[in-house]
Image (tube, rainbow, N blue to C red; front, side, top):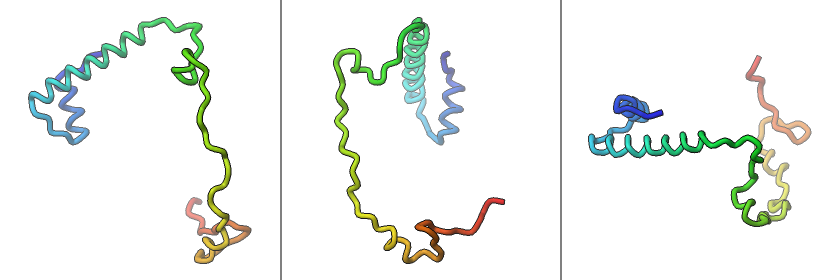
Length: 99
């Protein structure tokens, strides 16, 4: 799939971009080069290839550096709900807006 100059003009209009003629030509060639790479990747037969959870996983074992899942803020529900017009069982009560 290759974009034409009218395609690029329409996209620029929709994105509210004003492109100069030299910018349009350069951008058109860059976008079309990107689409060429995508077409090359789509042409590769990937049947039987298991998807990777992480691209580096093929080269080395990955240990994700995740922080411990602990509460870092105190529970201030009651203090936060003091200014609410209506509260029940720890929940904010609001008027029904969907019939």
